[in-house]
Image 1: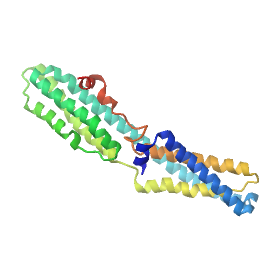
Image 2 (image 1 turned 60 degrees about the vertical axis):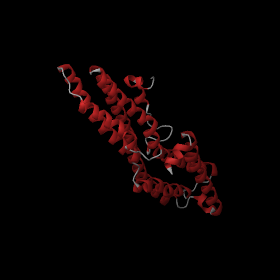
Image 3 (image 1 turned 120 degrees about the vertical axis):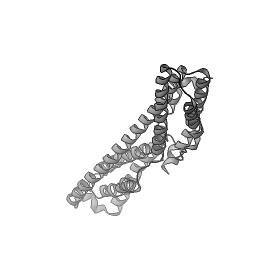
Image 4 (image 1 turned 90 degrees about the horizontal axis):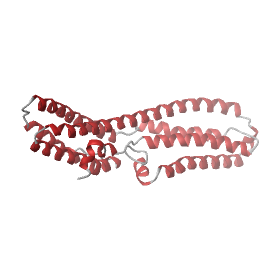
Length: 263
């Protein structure tokens, strides 16, 4: 559901739906409950409701803070992985210049195919939540084959050869980490705590009686808006490769790798 929303609606639209919808439902529920039970306006149970709200609010706030920080850390880690993978590919592109022309041409062809497969094939798959190793496996294997069949003749070639092999191994590791991150999502239990907690907390605000309807609407709406915005962050950050705020494949198209896109 979250992937469908992120891939079909802009973040601003989702924000209106999440925050605005939460506030609208909360205010409507509060007004309807007040009309059905006018005695709530007298605030006879405010002491009990205040204590309950304080307890639930504190617990729910800790849960939301933990979830949001975890998701933000996951997004930052995914960005680091993408940047590291692109950097390793760029270093191989530069190191290849030290090799004989046939080796350089074959390695460039393999790396060009790899970065194009990452951006054109693998990225849409990750956005849809269906990442695949197969999209880049052929090109990565070709790069390994080129280096495995090459026997450096000079000390200069040996230095660049060792660096190229190390960087290619790093690319394989970073690719696995990137695909793993693309498959991850918030565990079901935390999803229940995050979204189910809102279902418990917001209705509790309906029971806090205030004489003036405007003040109660402002109170309920403020709490609902804060909760809705927090849930929006959970929704947006849960999928680092989907939506407007997703990680961009731009690192694979910049710097030394730009040569593969201008040919």
